[in-house]
Amino acid sequence: MTKVTAGVITGIALGAAYGVLSGRGEPRMLDLFITVLGRASQGIINGVLAAYIAPGRTPLWRAMLFSGLIGLALGALAGIVGRDWQHTLPFGAFIGVACGAAVARARG
Image (cartoon, rainbow, N blue to C red; front, side, top):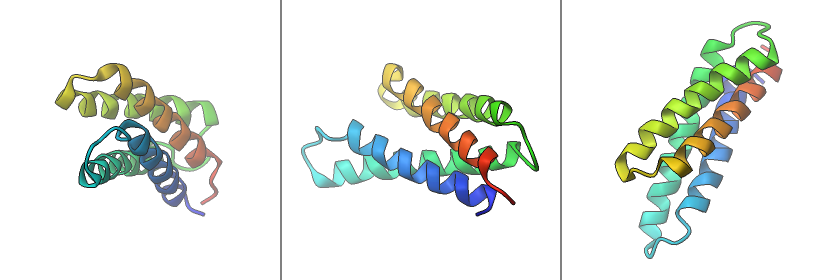
């Protein structure tokens, strides 16, 4: 599995799970779908950027740190819309750290 594939799969899985958790009180199914799609796309972007910043044999801690910072920035951008940074920042950072770990552990 390549680094980009590992980062994107991790980002999609965790982003979609976060979308389901954050949108579970939505009254319409379309609103839930849009929330899941938005968070999954945030995870895809984080996975691709994590693969970009961790080329070759990057140490695990460095990939997790920089990818976590990217996730934190993406969470801040996501929180602008609803001014809901207390939820978007920690989850964005967690998705970033997980994508960084997956990318650092991938071969190729």
